[in-house]
Image (cartoon, rainbow, N blue to C red; front, side, top):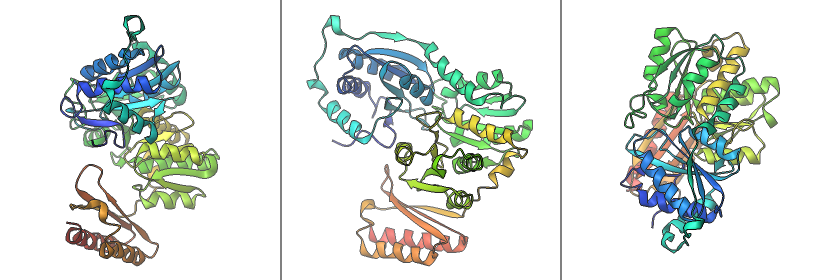
Length: 442
């Protein structure tokens, strides 16, 4: 049986790969593993049409093993994490496929307000595959289901407290991706005094992430230019990511956002241990900018869970991914697009420079990314010719760049990233490695 959990929970095409039966079995597994009988599990969802179906199945599975269920309705993933981590709840489950198309959906399990670790996921997988053997409950011991849409008000207050008066008078474009952010971001920003232009805030169950949001920020960029806004913020479907635009409508990605916030905290002495945590995918320009300011960048494998674990190990308060999944550990236990937007705006309002000037402090090294279609993507390190070529190319860069080779987690491809100061050199290296990978690993 293949592994169910990926880098961000269980995902698949709703009602094909991700069925109500699987959701029911996960509900039973979570309830059994966390000994949730007589305790509550909170469930939230984004705006996909399949969300209601999967929430009902999860609730059935949880109540079958005696757990009570609190359904939050449509909520952001960080909103669910906040509720799950700040109440008398044993766990939280978010029904969302984040930035994926509407036909997909996903199940993210949280405990203590954060995503469960690899060990817990392995246990849950074993329980799912043996779900028929899990004991059920009699009528008097079954769990109950309640719906409480007001539970997220404490999360809204948490965001308002983080913002203070930083939004007052600011001209902001918000792209809500026809997802969960539509339920909270427009009203929150307007109530805090911003002049808000709202895009993609009319979810219909099928238009989440459709030509909008953080994966398609071009409409947000155009709106910034059209309305003369100070900043644009584009979220993904469950609002745990953010991609921004400056006053010219130019993109400010996750690396730039992390850099801007880290440099501000370094200057203020509030970047704990002077450490920023990022993944192997973050641009080398970010590392140079942080190092030049007296800080240190620590890299992790791809995935926000790896970022958070490294933040705990190094007692860091800021970390994230180039994709815009950024964690402020002094305020949250997971990536939060709305909170990230607020933190970015706080830095913007604290100085007398526009966002474009702040972003310019985080340079980008040229990068080439190629996806080599190969049958044996996991064998690149043991192939003597290919591994030797990677080592030789790394030496050619002489410390002025880096090479990252990793197998795709979802496709029969080897991802080859080459980064450095000389665009022609890195392009040549990437193409040489791509050609060799196709010859040696097929």
